[in-house]
Image 1 (cartoon, rainbow, N blue to C red):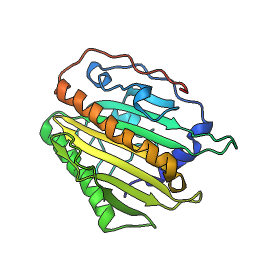
Image 2: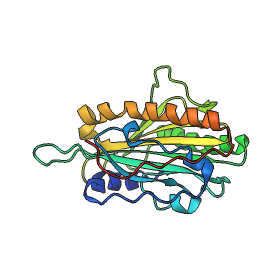
Image 3: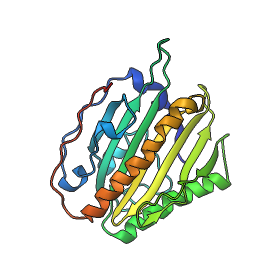
Image 4: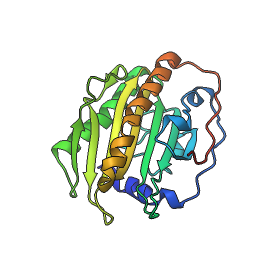
Length: 233
């Protein structure tokens, strides 16, 4: 079962935590997937932007995963970026939106396809067999095309929490040796206007990462500079 509750803890708490420093990049090819803060809903705080090893994945609350561990799937490396938007009102009330993505590189296209199938299958099972008060569905991409393998739409789950229902969505597709997952989460009470305004960034981020993966084609790429943590107004 997908660990949705971990995402909810992050949604509730990101705005009060100090943002993480950008880690040193240790691999050329994963660094090619680093996006810029302006690619996310703004004003926003960059929480994490780094080359993501399999060991580091376990530390990330907004990376959730169905089925076998990444190491069992033969994931090699990848990139993770996470950005939070507080939506602070004049009353000091917070309406947080967390947007993140995980790029995972595999030794072959077949292994990337197997990992894609596992994640897609987990979502489809969650739709057919909801548990613990959670409901899931697929939202249309309205003709949007991603990767050489893609899920049938944007997966969306709503789960009750002590602070109210939270919505978590995932855009899932595979391009060559890469599995690409774009996540977004917010309290359902903030769907209008905050969630609605932020959701198009899931699609635009997906297109940017798909383009990079298509151009990269599994080869080593020149290093790029990771975006600096901070607030934008």
